[in-house]
Amino acid sequence: MRILHTMLRVGDLQRSIAFYTEVLGMRLLRQQDYPEGKFTLAFVGYADEAEAAAIELTYNYGVGNYELGNAFGHIALAVPDAAAACAAIRARGGRVVREAGPMKHGATIIAFVEDPDGYKIELIQKS
Image (cartoon, rainbow, N blue to C red; front, side, top):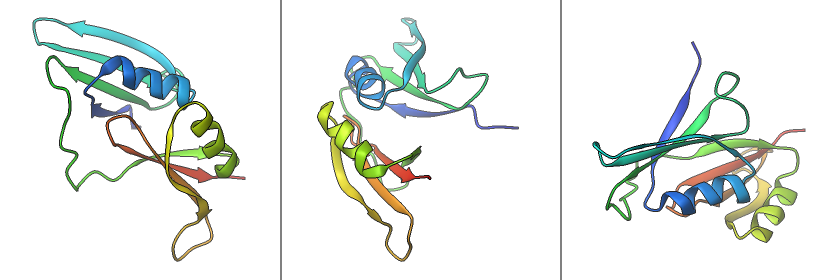
């Protein structure tokens, strides 16, 4: 078994695709519109779905925003240098909500960015 994807509901599909592809450097892997169901799915990721997990962005027609609730935490991405990743993300218009630094009660270097819908993405520095 392996994880295939994580689904996030988004309020503006094109804005979210732009964030994940242009700001975080993922690729749009596939997109399908389901007019009878009144939703569109777009899958983004760093590798083909046969090789790695993806993020499914779900846009439900006419829904511009969602309450994120307090159960979902974040998506985590490995980066070689968290501070450099924050600088690059900020330069591409992304929002850094926690600068790179050691995690509380540990030594791992982490940072957090936020997507256009408010979902948190953790950057974990891996050497």
